[in-house]
Image 1: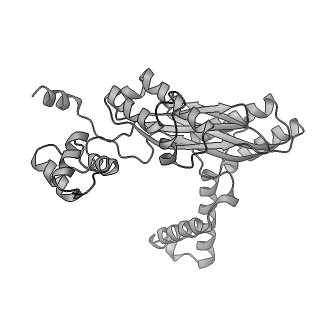
Image 2: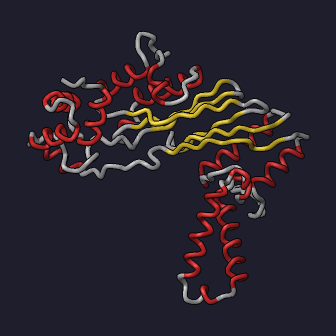
Image 3: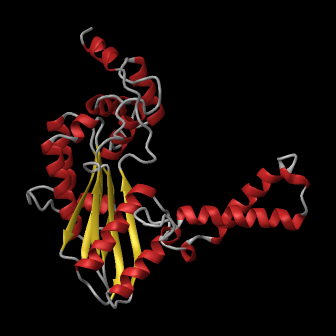
Length: 311
């Protein structure tokens, strides 16, 4: 008989939305064949018709932990409902996981799950997570984390919307004072609001730019009027639109949201603060997590769910 692993049970549960024990039984009955196990659950009315329609954890919160002004970590832990995301016990657990990242050298989520849980050293992080799933009654998932260590500057953090968005900003600076940190916090708020992808244009992948140019050119060529313009004009139009896009996705090129003249860029604002404080000050890196971004969210029909539970 094939060995039934925890990962197989987890994968089957995600595919079908069925209970964990039902998934384990189905795999045992089908000798570990995933397709047959899905069919087994469906025939027994324990699986939902649509793949991944059940236990999708796409709500949750982001929490940030800091160690002085040199180290910060952000973690996203997902739950199935926003109600649980506001649960004090859940929030405490996420905070503990963020602190765990600070003290750990784990490179990925699997490695983090395997380390001893600092808040209760009798368990691993994974065992603590499983315990929380059982206690809270929802599927919970440590989705991702990031740890930032400042080598030649400092870090600041900003959390928005009660944990919906978490931002860490790292600077390169030879002066670390309240004014520098305030500027970094302002930049973190900018990142939370406008979601840039890069610090500056030097970070933008050449392949990405070429791909965007191809898309823009195709759009132009599919326009009856624009496609008739001279090639040189078309090239200028492409460059102009690429430049406009870069101003949106590159942090230092974005218009600073607090700019008094409505024109000052983030890069110009940082340069102004550097000059005022006699510092060699620049934004080196940022991390922005938004809860549930890129995840499929289950469409809830609460009335229908209650009716179903009542039979």
